[in-house]
Image (cartoon, rainbow, N blue to C red; front, side, top):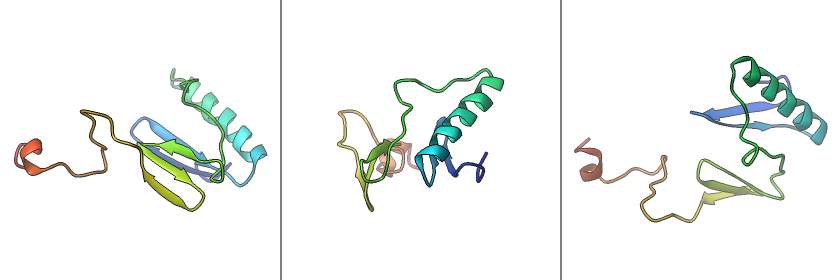
Length: 93
């Protein structure tokens, strides 16, 4: 998959396919959907979309727009997976 339509980035069950143009993005989305279907998995229709860096997009609790990225606004009781928690919250680890 990676390199065929663009650059695939995956973290757990989230993924993004970075493509050079709309045609590659559309073909890549169809390819990803087809491959997931073979595994009896599917894309979440409410979370699947094609965007540009200029328009911006969200992934893994981060907002990306243009050449910048920043954490989404925190929600009460939610900790971003890439932000370290204090040792007391991690059982001393």
